[in-house]
Each structure stands twice: as C-alpha cells, then as structure tokens.
Amino acid sequence: MSDARSLLLDDIIYSGWANQRLLDASSALSSTELERDLHLSHSSIIVTLRHVYDGERVWLDAIRDTPDGETYVLPQGPAPLLSLDSLKQYWPKLWEGYRAWIEKPAAIDDLNTEIIVVMPGCAPGIPRRNVLRHVLDHSQFHRGQMIAMIRALGHCPPAVNRMDYFLGKGI
Image (tube, rainbow, N blue to C red; front, side, top):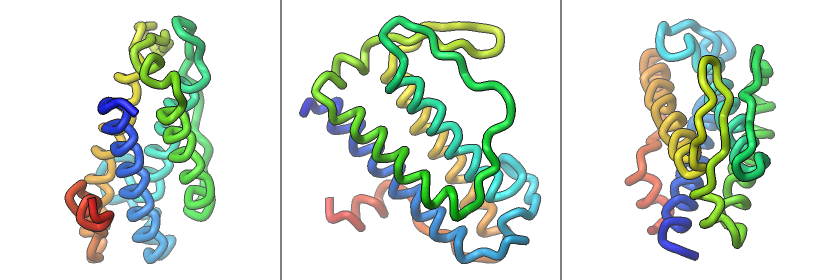
C-alpha cells in the first residue's frame, strides 16, 4: 500500500476510534443530557452526533458510488433522526465502508479522480481525496465541540486526540 493510502487509512481508523469513544461516553449520559441545548454546534450532543454521522454517510456515498467525472447531488431535506442506539449500530458500518474503499487496489487512482458535487449554488469538480479530507476534518471539528458539551454537563469527556489513539493502539 502506498504511503498516501496508508496515511488516509490510519486517519479513517483513527476517526472511527474517536467517534466510538464519543458514542461510548454518550451512552453514560441521560436522555435529558443528550438532548439538552447547550448552545454549541448543532445544539445538543445527540443532534451533533447525528450531524457528524450523516456527513460521513453522505460523503461515503459520494466518493464510493459516484463514477469518475459524474455528478453527485447532495441529499436535500432533513437527515434521519437516529437514536443513540441506532448510531452505535450503523456508524461502524460506515467506518468499514471507508476502510474497504481506501484498501481496494484502485483506491490510489480513485483518490485523484474528480466527482462533481452539486451543492446549493454551485457544482464544483472535487478530487475524491479532498472530499475525504473534508470528511475527516469535519468530524474532528465537531468531536471537539462534543467534548466541550460533555464538560459543560459536568462530566469528564473521553480522550479522543490522536496521541491518545497512538498510545492506546501501541503505534
């Protein structure tokens, strides 16, 4: 596997690990705490978890299922209102989807091919590697917000930074 694919694969595995840590921490919260509007990110922990999950779901569909040079239209309308238990069930399947996509033999070529993403107001051609980087950055950004929300509720949040991942995995 090329260095680029190895780095991206590690980023995908790390992101899934960090998301799982937040799901586990969220399981220890009451439904009132999960749903409390803390005036951060997408209001509450559960709504922010759903937002991150949906972003990862949508972009996986885009990079995995859109033929080279073809158009992907971002879904319109509200995202599914998944429960915490549903997120815990479905989210690992997304991480495996990203992992399988990046591990397939043609992935290095796929990383450089463009797809056309139709978003409100524009339809740019975007290399798949940039879509993947966006997904990873987007998830990381919102994980930080959820850490702040857990702290605001008076709980000790999980460690989700990359060094904790490296140390915990023995890398």
